Amino acid sequence: MRQEFISFVEYSLRKKTCLSVLQLSVSLYPDTTIAYKTCGWIKYAFQERSIRELNLETLRRDGRPSRTVLVLPRNFFSAENLTILKLSRCSFARLPPNYNPSWPSLKVLHLSEVTLGGQFFNGLIKGCPLIEDIALTVCHFDQEVLPVSGFTRLVQVVLCQPIKLQRIEVDNVPNLLMFALDEFLVIGCKHVVIGANPKLEVLKLSSSSVSPEVCIDISSKFPALKVLHLNLSSLDRIQISSPQLEELALWSSTNVDAIVDAPKLKSLKQWVHHATAAAAAAVPIKGIPNVTIKGRQSLQNLQLEDFEVYELGVSDLFKMREYLANFEHIEHLGMSIHDKMIWGGEPWKKSLELGSCDLVPIPVMPRIKCLELGYTRAFVKDKAKYEGALDGLLWICHPESVVVSFLPANVPCFANLLITAFCKELSMLMRKRKDCCKSACIKCWRHDLKSFQVKRVGVDGSSSDIRCRTLLQSLPQMSPQDKICFMLQW
View 1 (cartoon, helix red, strand yellow):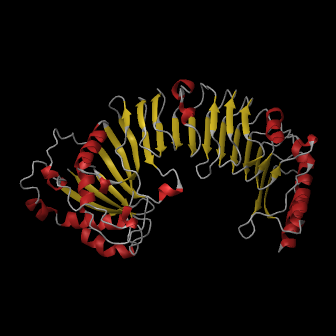
View 2 (view 1 turned 180 degrees about the vertical axis):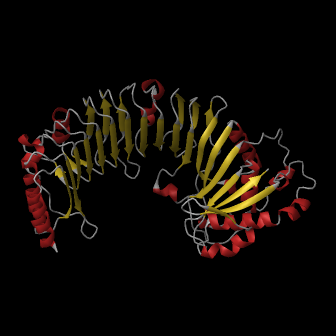
View 3 (view 1 turned 90 degrees about the horizontal axis):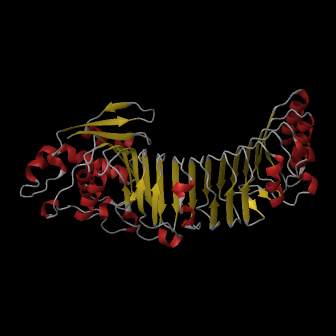
Protein backbone atom coordinates (compact mmCIF):
# COMPACT_ATOMS: atom_id res chain seq x y z
CA MET A 1 0.00 0.00 0.00
CA ARG A 2 2.83 2.39 0.85
CA GLN A 3 4.63 1.74 -2.43
CA GLU A 4 1.40 2.31 -4.36
CA PHE A 5 1.02 5.68 -2.65
CA ILE A 6 4.61 6.66 -3.48
CA SER A 7 4.18 5.64 -7.10
CA PHE A 8 0.92 7.55 -7.39
CA VAL A 9 2.40 10.79 -6.03
CA GLU A 10 5.50 10.60 -8.21
CA TYR A 11 3.44 9.84 -11.31
CA SER A 12 1.14 12.79 -10.54
CA LEU A 13 4.06 15.18 -10.08
CA ARG A 14 5.67 14.15 -13.39
CA LYS A 15 2.35 14.41 -15.23
CA LYS A 16 1.54 17.92 -13.99
CA THR A 17 3.43 20.48 -16.07
CA CYS A 18 2.15 23.47 -14.10
CA LEU A 19 1.31 22.62 -10.48
CA SER A 20 -0.21 25.42 -8.38
CA VAL A 21 -1.51 23.50 -5.32
CA LEU A 22 0.27 20.67 -3.52
CA GLN A 23 -1.65 18.94 -0.73
CA LEU A 24 -0.19 15.94 1.08
CA SER A 25 -1.29 13.94 4.13
CA VAL A 26 1.45 11.48 5.06
CA SER A 27 2.35 9.24 7.98
CA LEU A 28 6.08 9.22 8.73
CA TYR A 29 7.23 5.66 9.31
CA PRO A 30 10.25 4.87 11.54
CA ASP A 31 12.37 3.90 8.54
CA THR A 32 12.19 7.54 7.27
CA THR A 33 11.26 6.43 3.73
CA ILE A 34 8.12 8.56 3.55
CA ALA A 35 9.88 11.52 5.19
CA TYR A 36 12.69 11.35 2.64
CA LYS A 37 10.25 10.98 -0.26
CA THR A 38 8.07 13.86 0.99
CA CYS A 39 11.03 16.24 1.07
CA GLY A 40 11.95 15.15 -2.45
CA TRP A 41 8.41 15.76 -3.71
CA ILE A 42 8.36 19.25 -2.20
CA LYS A 43 11.79 20.04 -3.65
CA TYR A 44 10.71 18.85 -7.11
CA ALA A 45 7.42 20.79 -6.94
CA PHE A 46 9.10 24.07 -5.99
CA GLN A 47 11.71 23.73 -8.75
CA GLU A 48 8.92 24.59 -11.19
CA ARG A 49 8.30 27.85 -9.24
CA SER A 50 4.58 27.58 -9.88
CA ILE A 51 3.42 26.36 -6.45
CA ARG A 52 1.07 28.88 -4.88
CA GLU A 53 -0.36 26.73 -2.09
CA LEU A 54 1.26 24.02 0.04
CA ASN A 55 -0.87 22.05 2.51
CA LEU A 56 1.26 19.42 4.25
CA GLU A 57 -0.12 17.32 7.10
CA THR A 58 2.00 14.67 8.79
CA LEU A 59 -0.40 12.25 10.42
CA ARG A 60 -0.08 10.61 13.80
CA ARG A 61 0.48 6.87 13.97
CA ASP A 62 -1.40 4.95 16.69
CA GLY A 63 -2.35 8.27 18.23
CA ARG A 64 1.28 9.30 18.79
CA PRO A 65 3.39 11.79 16.83
CA SER A 66 6.22 10.33 14.79
CA ARG A 67 9.76 10.69 16.09
CA THR A 68 10.95 11.35 12.56
CA VAL A 69 11.60 15.05 11.97
CA LEU A 70 10.64 16.30 8.54
CA VAL A 71 13.50 18.39 7.13
CA LEU A 72 12.14 20.63 4.39
CA PRO A 73 14.33 21.41 1.36
CA ARG A 74 16.17 24.70 0.98
CA ASN A 75 14.25 25.88 -2.09
CA PHE A 76 11.04 25.67 -0.01
CA PHE A 77 12.26 28.61 2.10
CA SER A 78 12.67 30.83 -0.97
CA ALA A 79 9.47 30.06 -2.87
CA GLU A 80 8.65 33.34 -4.64
CA ASN A 81 5.07 32.52 -5.67
CA LEU A 82 3.90 30.77 -2.49
CA THR A 83 0.78 32.55 -1.17
CA ILE A 84 -0.79 29.95 1.19
CA LEU A 85 1.20 27.72 3.54
CA LYS A 86 -0.44 25.21 5.90
CA LEU A 87 1.83 22.79 7.78
CA SER A 88 1.41 20.40 10.70
CA ARG A 89 3.88 18.48 12.86
CA CYS A 90 7.25 19.63 11.61
CA SER A 91 10.09 21.73 13.01
CA PHE A 92 11.53 25.13 12.20
CA ALA A 93 13.90 25.18 15.17
CA ARG A 94 17.69 25.44 14.80
CA LEU A 95 17.57 26.23 11.12
CA PRO A 96 20.84 26.99 9.26
CA PRO A 97 21.44 30.75 8.76
CA ASN A 98 20.63 30.59 5.03
CA TYR A 99 17.24 28.97 5.73
CA ASN A 100 15.44 32.13 6.77
CA PRO A 101 11.95 32.24 5.23
CA SER A 102 11.71 34.40 2.14
CA TRP A 103 8.19 34.19 0.79
CA PRO A 104 7.51 37.60 -0.78
CA SER A 105 4.03 36.55 -1.96
CA LEU A 106 2.86 34.73 1.19
CA LYS A 107 -0.48 35.89 2.60
CA VAL A 108 -1.70 32.94 4.73
CA LEU A 109 0.40 31.02 7.26
CA HIS A 110 -1.29 28.26 9.31
CA LEU A 111 0.93 26.04 11.47
CA SER A 112 -0.23 23.22 13.76
CA GLU A 113 1.98 21.36 16.27
CA VAL A 114 5.09 22.92 14.77
CA THR A 115 8.27 23.70 16.68
CA LEU A 116 9.20 27.34 16.06
CA GLY A 117 12.53 28.99 16.65
CA GLY A 118 12.97 32.71 17.20
CA GLN A 119 14.99 32.91 14.00
CA PHE A 120 12.08 31.64 11.93
CA PHE A 121 9.40 33.91 13.36
CA ASN A 122 11.62 36.99 13.30
CA GLY A 123 12.48 36.22 9.67
CA LEU A 124 8.81 36.41 8.72
CA ILE A 125 8.79 40.19 9.17
CA LYS A 126 11.42 40.76 6.48
CA GLY A 127 10.74 37.73 4.33
CA CYS A 128 6.92 37.94 4.18
CA PRO A 129 5.93 41.61 3.65
CA LEU A 130 2.44 40.69 2.33
CA ILE A 131 1.36 38.28 5.07
CA GLU A 132 -2.25 38.85 6.20
CA ASP A 133 -3.29 35.79 8.20
CA ILE A 134 -1.29 33.95 10.89
CA ALA A 135 -2.76 30.98 12.83
CA LEU A 136 -0.55 28.97 15.19
CA THR A 137 -2.14 25.94 16.90
CA VAL A 138 -0.35 24.01 19.66
CA CYS A 139 3.02 25.27 18.46
CA HIS A 140 6.14 24.81 20.58
CA PHE A 141 8.30 27.94 20.97
CA ASP A 142 11.97 27.95 21.95
CA GLN A 143 11.62 31.50 23.30
CA GLU A 144 9.52 32.97 26.12
CA VAL A 145 8.59 36.21 24.35
CA LEU A 146 6.71 36.33 21.05
CA PRO A 147 6.91 39.74 19.36
CA VAL A 148 4.17 40.30 16.77
CA SER A 149 5.40 43.57 15.35
CA GLY A 150 6.24 45.22 12.06
CA PHE A 151 3.72 43.31 9.90
CA THR A 152 2.22 46.15 7.88
CA ARG A 153 -0.33 44.00 5.99
CA LEU A 154 -1.26 41.62 8.83
CA VAL A 155 -5.05 41.44 9.36
CA GLN A 156 -5.63 38.39 11.59
CA VAL A 157 -3.66 36.56 14.31
CA VAL A 158 -4.92 33.41 16.06
CA LEU A 159 -2.81 31.68 18.73
CA CYS A 160 -4.24 28.44 20.14
CA GLN A 161 -2.53 26.62 23.03
CA PRO A 162 0.98 28.06 22.52
CA ILE A 163 3.61 26.11 24.47
CA LYS A 164 6.38 27.72 26.58
CA LEU A 165 5.37 31.31 25.83
CA GLN A 166 5.38 33.67 28.81
CA ARG A 167 4.73 36.98 27.09
CA ILE A 168 3.08 38.09 23.84
CA GLU A 169 3.69 41.59 22.50
CA VAL A 170 1.51 42.96 19.71
CA ASP A 171 2.45 46.39 18.43
CA ASN A 172 3.03 48.31 15.23
CA VAL A 173 0.54 46.20 13.27
CA PRO A 174 -1.50 49.03 11.74
CA ASN A 175 -4.03 46.94 9.77
CA LEU A 176 -4.77 44.29 12.39
CA LEU A 177 -8.51 43.56 12.56
CA MET A 178 -8.53 40.43 14.75
CA PHE A 179 -6.41 39.02 17.55
CA ALA A 180 -7.33 35.80 19.38
CA LEU A 181 -5.51 33.87 22.11
CA ASP A 182 -6.88 30.56 23.38
CA GLU A 183 -4.75 28.80 25.97
CA PHE A 184 -7.29 27.95 28.63
CA LEU A 185 -6.38 24.26 28.69
CA VAL A 186 -2.74 24.97 29.56
CA ILE A 187 -1.00 27.09 32.17
CA GLY A 188 1.11 29.33 30.00
CA CYS A 189 1.40 32.94 29.00
CA LYS A 190 1.17 35.41 31.88
CA HIS A 191 1.33 38.70 30.01
CA VAL A 192 -0.31 39.90 26.81
CA VAL A 193 0.54 43.43 25.74
CA ILE A 194 -1.43 44.84 22.82
CA GLY A 195 -0.67 48.32 21.62
CA ALA A 196 -3.41 50.77 20.73
CA ASN A 197 -4.95 50.07 17.35
CA PRO A 198 -7.75 52.19 15.83
CA LYS A 199 -8.72 49.40 13.37
CA LEU A 200 -8.95 46.34 15.67
CA GLU A 201 -12.50 44.93 15.48
CA VAL A 202 -12.25 41.49 17.14
CA LEU A 203 -10.41 40.69 20.38
CA LYS A 204 -10.70 37.23 21.99
CA LEU A 205 -8.63 36.31 25.03
CA SER A 206 -9.08 32.95 26.76
CA SER A 207 -6.50 32.14 29.41
CA SER A 208 -6.28 30.81 32.95
CA SER A 209 -3.03 32.65 33.61
CA VAL A 210 -3.03 35.95 31.68
CA SER A 211 -3.24 38.98 33.94
CA PRO A 212 -6.44 41.06 33.68
CA GLU A 213 -4.19 44.10 33.21
CA VAL A 214 -4.65 43.49 29.49
CA CYS A 215 -8.15 44.97 29.90
CA ILE A 216 -6.94 48.35 31.17
CA ASP A 217 -8.07 51.16 28.84
CA ILE A 218 -9.46 48.57 26.45
CA SER A 219 -12.17 50.95 25.21
CA SER A 220 -9.85 53.85 24.38
CA LYS A 221 -7.16 51.62 22.84
CA PHE A 222 -9.57 49.91 20.44
CA PRO A 223 -12.34 52.38 19.46
CA ALA A 224 -13.49 50.24 16.48
CA LEU A 225 -14.00 47.08 18.57
CA LYS A 226 -17.08 45.07 17.51
CA VAL A 227 -16.47 41.67 19.15
CA LEU A 228 -14.94 41.25 22.62
CA HIS A 229 -14.52 37.84 24.32
CA LEU A 230 -12.75 37.76 27.68
CA ASN A 231 -12.21 34.39 29.37
CA LEU A 232 -9.82 35.30 32.18
CA SER A 233 -9.88 33.47 35.50
CA SER A 234 -8.88 36.45 37.62
CA LEU A 235 -11.11 39.02 35.93
CA ASP A 236 -13.48 40.44 38.55
CA ARG A 237 -14.23 43.97 37.36
CA ILE A 238 -14.31 45.75 34.02
CA GLN A 239 -15.78 48.90 32.52
CA ILE A 240 -16.42 49.03 28.78
CA SER A 241 -17.50 52.04 26.77
CA SER A 242 -17.49 51.17 23.09
CA PRO A 243 -19.77 52.82 20.51
CA GLN A 244 -19.21 50.03 17.93
CA LEU A 245 -19.34 46.94 20.19
CA GLU A 246 -21.91 44.38 18.99
CA GLU A 247 -20.89 41.14 20.75
CA LEU A 248 -19.61 40.72 24.31
CA ALA A 249 -18.73 37.48 26.14
CA LEU A 250 -17.42 37.39 29.71
CA TRP A 251 -16.06 34.33 31.52
CA SER A 252 -14.43 34.28 34.93
CA SER A 253 -14.08 32.25 38.11
CA THR A 254 -16.13 34.95 39.83
CA ASN A 255 -19.27 36.83 38.95
CA VAL A 256 -17.71 39.64 36.91
CA ASP A 257 -18.81 43.12 37.94
CA ALA A 258 -19.14 44.81 34.55
CA ILE A 259 -20.47 48.18 33.46
CA VAL A 260 -21.11 48.30 29.72
CA ASP A 261 -21.96 51.33 27.62
CA ALA A 262 -22.46 49.91 24.11
CA PRO A 263 -25.49 51.26 22.22
CA LYS A 264 -25.01 48.79 19.31
CA LEU A 265 -24.71 45.68 21.51
CA LYS A 266 -26.61 42.72 20.02
CA SER A 267 -25.21 39.69 21.83
CA LEU A 268 -24.18 39.19 25.45
CA LYS A 269 -22.85 35.95 26.92
CA GLN A 270 -21.78 35.31 30.50
CA TRP A 271 -20.34 32.18 32.01
CA VAL A 272 -18.94 31.32 35.43
CA HIS A 273 -16.31 28.61 35.03
CA HIS A 274 -14.07 26.57 37.30
CA ALA A 275 -10.57 28.01 37.39
CA THR A 276 -8.85 24.83 38.60
CA ALA A 277 -9.34 21.10 38.44
CA ALA A 278 -10.04 21.07 42.19
CA ALA A 279 -12.81 23.63 41.79
CA ALA A 280 -14.36 21.60 38.97
CA ALA A 281 -15.14 18.85 41.47
CA ALA A 282 -17.01 21.25 43.74
CA VAL A 283 -20.48 22.71 43.45
CA PRO A 284 -20.36 25.43 40.74
CA ILE A 285 -20.68 29.08 41.59
CA LYS A 286 -24.18 30.49 41.66
CA GLY A 287 -24.97 34.10 40.91
CA ILE A 288 -27.29 36.51 39.20
CA PRO A 289 -25.45 38.21 36.29
CA ASN A 290 -23.70 41.31 37.56
CA VAL A 291 -23.47 43.09 34.20
CA THR A 292 -24.95 46.56 34.01
CA ILE A 293 -25.92 47.70 30.51
CA LYS A 294 -26.35 51.44 30.28
CA GLY A 295 -29.49 52.47 28.48
CA ARG A 296 -32.57 50.33 27.92
CA GLN A 297 -31.92 48.45 24.70
CA SER A 298 -32.83 45.26 22.85
CA LEU A 299 -30.64 42.20 22.44
CA GLN A 300 -30.71 39.61 19.71
CA ASN A 301 -29.06 37.03 21.96
CA LEU A 302 -28.45 36.72 25.70
CA GLN A 303 -26.64 33.55 26.80
CA LEU A 304 -26.24 32.53 30.45
CA GLU A 305 -23.98 29.52 31.03
CA ASP A 306 -23.95 27.29 34.14
CA PHE A 307 -27.19 28.82 35.38
CA GLU A 308 -28.39 27.05 38.56
CA VAL A 309 -32.09 27.78 38.49
CA TYR A 310 -32.76 25.11 41.12
CA GLU A 311 -30.54 26.95 43.62
CA LEU A 312 -32.34 30.28 43.29
CA GLY A 313 -34.45 31.46 46.17
CA VAL A 314 -37.43 33.77 45.83
CA SER A 315 -35.33 36.93 46.23
CA ASP A 316 -32.96 35.64 43.53
CA LEU A 317 -35.90 35.11 41.17
CA PHE A 318 -36.93 38.72 41.73
CA LYS A 319 -33.41 39.89 40.91
CA MET A 320 -33.20 37.75 37.78
CA ARG A 321 -36.56 38.96 36.52
CA GLU A 322 -35.54 42.55 37.22
CA TYR A 323 -32.23 42.01 35.39
CA LEU A 324 -33.96 40.65 32.29
CA ALA A 325 -36.55 43.43 32.38
CA ASN A 326 -33.78 46.02 32.03
CA PHE A 327 -33.65 45.10 28.34
CA GLU A 328 -36.28 46.49 26.01
CA HIS A 329 -36.59 43.14 24.21
CA ILE A 330 -34.62 39.88 24.01
CA GLU A 331 -34.99 37.90 20.80
CA HIS A 332 -33.24 34.77 22.09
CA LEU A 333 -32.44 33.91 25.71
CA GLY A 334 -30.22 30.87 26.10
CA MET A 335 -29.74 29.26 29.49
CA SER A 336 -27.25 26.46 29.97
CA ILE A 337 -28.49 24.81 33.14
CA HIS A 338 -25.88 23.20 35.37
CA ASP A 339 -27.20 19.82 36.46
CA LYS A 340 -26.11 19.23 40.04
CA MET A 341 -27.70 15.81 40.37
CA ILE A 342 -24.44 13.97 39.76
CA TRP A 343 -23.41 15.01 43.27
CA GLY A 344 -26.52 13.51 44.78
CA GLY A 345 -28.83 15.23 47.21
CA GLU A 346 -32.09 16.97 46.38
CA PRO A 347 -31.35 19.31 43.45
CA TRP A 348 -34.78 20.70 42.65
CA LYS A 349 -37.08 22.54 44.98
CA LYS A 350 -40.58 21.14 44.83
CA SER A 351 -42.22 24.46 45.53
CA LEU A 352 -40.97 28.01 45.22
CA GLU A 353 -43.62 29.27 47.64
CA LEU A 354 -43.95 32.56 45.83
CA GLY A 355 -47.26 33.15 47.54
CA SER A 356 -45.60 33.61 50.91
CA CYS A 357 -43.21 36.21 49.54
CA ASP A 358 -43.57 39.77 50.85
CA LEU A 359 -41.10 41.36 48.40
CA VAL A 360 -42.58 44.40 46.67
CA PRO A 361 -42.80 45.79 44.12
CA ILE A 362 -42.88 42.87 41.71
CA PRO A 363 -40.55 43.50 38.71
CA VAL A 364 -42.22 43.96 35.34
CA MET A 365 -42.30 40.95 33.06
CA PRO A 366 -39.36 40.84 30.58
CA ARG A 367 -40.14 40.72 26.87
CA ILE A 368 -38.53 37.53 25.54
CA LYS A 369 -39.34 35.82 22.27
CA CYS A 370 -37.52 32.49 22.66
CA LEU A 371 -36.10 30.73 25.72
CA GLU A 372 -33.74 27.90 24.78
CA LEU A 373 -32.56 25.56 27.51
CA GLY A 374 -29.34 23.61 27.39
CA TYR A 375 -27.34 21.74 30.01
CA THR A 376 -23.71 21.47 31.00
CA ARG A 377 -23.99 18.19 32.93
CA ALA A 378 -25.93 15.72 30.80
CA PHE A 379 -26.21 12.65 33.02
CA VAL A 380 -28.04 12.30 36.31
CA LYS A 381 -28.36 9.46 38.81
CA ASP A 382 -31.98 9.69 39.84
CA LYS A 383 -35.17 10.95 38.28
CA ALA A 384 -36.38 13.92 40.32
CA LYS A 385 -39.30 16.26 40.16
CA TYR A 386 -38.74 19.31 37.98
CA GLU A 387 -41.79 21.36 38.87
CA GLY A 388 -39.69 23.76 40.92
CA ALA A 389 -37.35 24.45 38.01
CA LEU A 390 -40.29 25.10 35.70
CA ASP A 391 -41.97 27.36 38.23
CA GLY A 392 -38.80 29.42 38.55
CA LEU A 393 -38.07 29.68 34.83
CA LEU A 394 -41.62 30.60 33.84
CA TRP A 395 -42.02 33.10 36.65
CA ILE A 396 -38.77 34.83 35.66
CA CYS A 397 -40.07 35.33 32.12
CA HIS A 398 -43.03 34.55 29.85
CA PRO A 399 -41.35 33.62 26.55
CA GLU A 400 -43.31 33.12 23.37
CA SER A 401 -41.57 29.75 22.96
CA VAL A 402 -39.45 27.37 25.05
CA VAL A 403 -37.01 25.14 23.15
CA VAL A 404 -35.38 22.08 24.74
CA SER A 405 -32.90 19.81 22.98
CA PHE A 406 -33.61 16.10 23.18
CA LEU A 407 -31.27 13.23 24.03
CA PRO A 408 -32.00 9.49 23.63
CA ALA A 409 -34.73 8.64 26.13
CA ASN A 410 -32.70 5.95 27.91
CA VAL A 411 -30.37 8.75 29.11
CA PRO A 412 -31.79 10.32 32.32
CA CYS A 413 -30.65 13.85 31.56
CA PHE A 414 -31.93 17.31 32.33
CA ALA A 415 -33.50 17.81 28.91
CA ASN A 416 -35.57 14.64 28.89
CA LEU A 417 -36.79 14.99 32.46
CA LEU A 418 -37.69 18.63 31.86
CA ILE A 419 -39.59 17.73 28.67
CA THR A 420 -41.50 15.08 30.60
CA ALA A 421 -42.29 17.42 33.48
CA PHE A 422 -43.39 20.22 31.13
CA CYS A 423 -45.71 17.91 29.19
CA LYS A 424 -47.34 16.68 32.39
CA GLU A 425 -47.75 20.22 33.68
CA LEU A 426 -49.40 21.39 30.46
CA SER A 427 -51.66 18.34 30.32
CA MET A 428 -52.98 19.12 33.81
CA LEU A 429 -52.90 22.89 33.38
CA MET A 430 -56.62 23.64 33.76
CA ARG A 431 -57.08 21.34 36.76
CA LYS A 432 -53.95 22.62 38.56
CA ARG A 433 -54.80 26.27 37.90
CA LYS A 434 -58.03 25.96 39.92
CA ASP A 435 -56.33 24.61 43.00
CA CYS A 436 -53.00 26.43 43.19
CA CYS A 437 -52.22 29.95 44.48
CA LYS A 438 -55.72 30.43 45.96
CA SER A 439 -54.66 32.68 48.81
CA ALA A 440 -51.35 33.86 47.38
CA CYS A 441 -50.76 37.48 46.41
CA ILE A 442 -48.26 36.36 43.76
CA LYS A 443 -49.65 33.89 41.24
CA CYS A 444 -47.62 31.28 39.42
CA TRP A 445 -47.24 31.08 35.64
CA ARG A 446 -50.23 28.74 35.24
CA HIS A 447 -52.60 31.64 35.85
CA ASP A 448 -51.10 33.70 33.01
CA LEU A 449 -50.90 31.03 30.31
CA LYS A 450 -53.85 31.20 27.91
CA SER A 451 -52.99 28.43 25.46
CA PHE A 452 -50.08 26.33 24.25
CA GLN A 453 -48.91 24.29 21.29
CA VAL A 454 -46.14 21.68 21.17
CA LYS A 455 -43.95 21.16 18.12
CA ARG A 456 -41.29 18.62 17.31
CA VAL A 457 -38.41 20.21 15.36
CA GLY A 458 -36.13 17.98 13.31
CA VAL A 459 -32.43 18.49 12.63
CA ASP A 460 -33.32 19.82 9.15
CA GLY A 461 -35.52 22.55 10.66
CA SER A 462 -38.83 20.94 9.75
CA SER A 463 -41.50 21.02 12.45
CA SER A 464 -44.74 19.18 13.17
CA ASP A 465 -47.43 19.55 15.83
CA ILE A 466 -47.54 16.88 18.51
CA ARG A 467 -49.75 16.29 21.55
CA CYS A 468 -48.20 16.06 25.01
CA ARG A 469 -49.41 12.50 25.54
CA THR A 470 -48.12 11.43 22.13
CA LEU A 471 -44.79 13.13 22.81
CA LEU A 472 -44.31 11.26 26.08
CA GLN A 473 -45.09 7.97 24.39
CA SER A 474 -42.78 8.63 21.43
CA LEU A 475 -39.69 9.79 23.36
CA PRO A 476 -37.90 6.42 22.95
CA GLN A 477 -38.28 6.60 19.15
CA MET A 478 -37.19 10.22 18.69
CA SER A 479 -34.05 11.23 16.83
CA PRO A 480 -31.15 12.17 19.16
CA GLN A 481 -30.89 15.65 17.63
CA ASP A 482 -34.55 16.59 17.71
CA LYS A 483 -35.76 19.61 19.61
CA ILE A 484 -39.07 20.15 21.36
CA CYS A 485 -40.64 23.60 21.04
CA PHE A 486 -43.40 24.66 23.42
CA MET A 487 -45.31 27.59 21.86
CA LEU A 488 -46.91 29.61 24.67
CA GLN A 489 -49.55 32.32 24.48
CA TRP A 490 -49.81 34.48 27.56
